[in-house]
Image 1 (cartoon, rainbow, N blue to C red):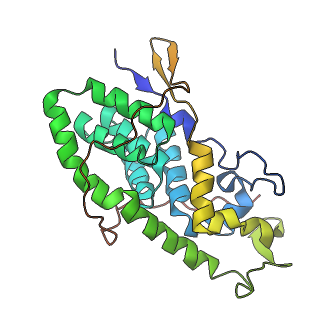
Image 2 (cartoon, helix red, strand yellow):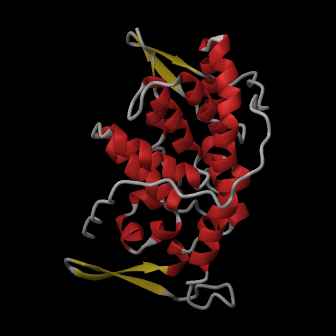
Length: 267
């Protein structure tokens, strides 16, 4: 009987669920805040935007659309979306089943050493035949060239810089008393600039550190005839990729996506 990995259960984890720092509260979860979304926050955060659209499509069993959305998020260095692409290829959802290509994508999702994805990567590898392993390491080079961090992070950091330049008073680096007005059915609502422009959303180093805090240690389970096996903390799998290094393609074409649904009105 086919085992279904519960990777999808990880995707809705609150991206604001970082342990509170001594001098600063964690930022709000942008994908769960309708005001932030309506205010255009996701315009400059395509990783979160297309992961969210992919999640919605997947839950509605629109697997073709979900795969395309996850690939677009993956293009902007989103490791959870890369893991979902792997799962979908592994299970034949949205595309013909391709276990070798699935391994290449899960190897990519584990690129930063996130424990859950490393565990799934090793399970994939152990299930592959010798021929599949050979093809995975060969075809994986093209996957890394286009979607690996060396190519994807510079693209994403450009998005952050572009968005940050839109901050009122950005020359001084302060948002001050800036209020962002969002029109809605009941009139305009305001978002404090300090919430919208939290440094952890816009400074590249802080953004990647934030992502690491969220994804480094969560366990990933799987279902097998009603039982759940959990990848627990302990001796971590080997982090090094099995796929040979390749030259990053920062200017690779952006993956296409379905027509995006109209934004939901602000309550």
